[in-house]
Length: 279
Image 1 (cartoon, rainbow, N blue to C red):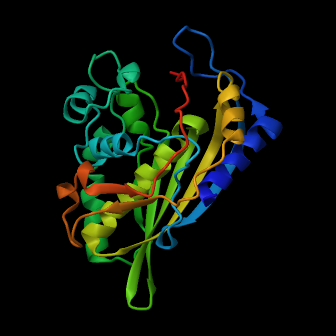
Image 2: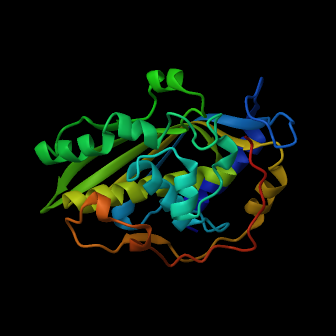
């Protein structure tokens, strides 16, 4: 059992047995019913990527290429235009969050990255001083929330530090998330930001180090309890999946594509489970 599978089962058990119920929940299912959940606060995990500990479960298939394409939409295209996401990447699950303009999710995610030039500032910061403790991307911008409607960012902050081990310099990354639909999105979000760390590391010439993942509200929706119990019964794969970015060191951040990523030794348990998303 991988570390990710072990933590996944621990968190499922903890939420089902010790979690508390949401009150005055914001999201709804497509039939209009309020999407209540059981949740825990303050979930934290640490993965040593250099030692091949990757935050992806083998208890069910995770669509890693789709997740990475969404990441590129946010941090390379720097867009919140859902039409671009669908036409360029064939990723279609954001349509339910389109605002009144009929095409975008508002001044959110990629639009915020573009507005404040976050990626270029981050990469320039590493070039000027890799050892700075100020390598941060923060999508929680109140001015943007006032500018337009739209879902507030869930995975909203990432932070980066370098450290030397012998002759090598490692890039460590931290993801902070306010809210996480654990059965559906936990490993998707984690692996997206591992992919982002890989892209930054390749651009800067660093090795991939550790990944820290903090979720403030980790929850399971009330229509997912049977799927949660099924996941607890599954036997995980014995192999340890590894996300590899197959480009030369020094490759420009904006020249990296989804096809450059390879998920090695990934043999998830099937069949896939079905989940109704809370909107």
